[in-house]
Length: 180
Ligand code: HQG
Image 1 (cartoon, helix red, strand yellow):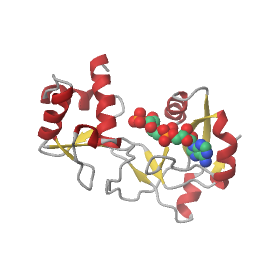
Image 2 (spheres, helix red, strand yellow):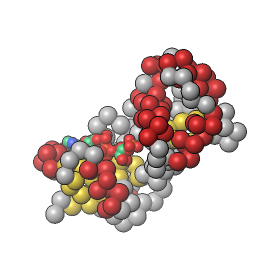
Image 3 (cartoon, helix red, strand yellow):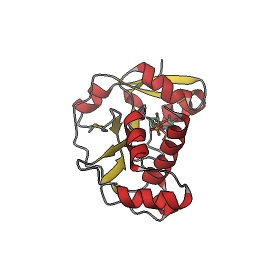
């Protein structure tokens, strides 16, 4: 992603996931912001963001963090919120195994309490080890945990998939985690 787009993407993550009030914006219940209002409000503090640039950021974002609605009048973050929103996920059957990238210092806590959602709405799980590596690397030397998602699903635990392919669930009890 271009540097400028990366900066805009970071700012959009802040606004659309955590602090819409920072620019006086309100999200609706499903997390959508009005595009015209968003552009106008961002422009009062950071001039230069046009619809064209916004479309480019949404399209070029490596992790498809944002989505427009059909007529492009609304935009929202696909996952990762800390503000209360209902993204209307429908439960789906997960693959037999999913992966979670973390770091060594959290290992003992996770062993005791399981994987918790911390500040987000869900625990985030990856479909492959490579993706989990990237997630874990944000915090240091990555440690990859294997989650027995198939067993969880069969015992009635729900899973969801965000529009950008991240697997989500409420909590992963330690008994479903392989620490190796
Ligand atoms: C850890 C990024 C202690 C957990 C990424 C993680 C991802 C515990 C941290 C997405 C714990 C929470 C999500 C427990 C979990 N005790 N630590 N019981 N349970 N943890 O950022 O999964 O760039 O909320 O291992 O790429 O790291 O934002 O979750 O290290 O997809 O689009 O607590 O965020 O995507 O950290 O990352 P996070 P995450 P974006």
